[in-house]
Image (tube, rainbow, N blue to C red; front, side, top):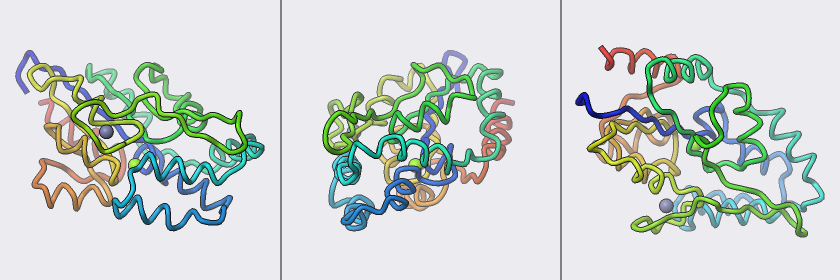
Length: 221
Ligand SMILES: [Mg+2]
Ligand SMILES: [Zn+2]
């Protein structure tokens, strides 16, 4: 990293900041008929992430709003070290963005204790005014991304040119591939590790945010 560059981190939410994938946990818990093939279609990249997430939530009636939110917030577990990691970024003058394919009704409340400014949190929206839950997409793909990401991480990353920023992605799954390919360094767990290996992306594996603090701390010296 040259002196003129600022370090910026794009951190996934589901399966990264939280231990589990909250969308899958919600759908699995309420178990509406027909959700399983949709998940498989997303994981095997037959349909886009936004199509899959939209289709799954459309299986749940809006009347279940309070129940769904209560369940989502109750089951989520924050990955160890995240609070310290947010503080580390602040103290080290690293810009931290949460780039999440999750939904506003659980992302914002779960991040509330950590003091991340709301304009540094990107996620999808929700609309409970119709028959069934409708997911809204305030941050869609922009040229050249055509993956129908929903919340397009690659589009956010592209707003930070490599001449000015050293860009780092933290993530775990298929939803992080496009952004991981663009950046200078990746912290990966789960499926994202094999993708980084396959594409020869510069990465380090992590299990807790303490691992990332330690690794980043080494890079700062
Ligand atoms: Mg994830
Ligand atoms: Zn996209």
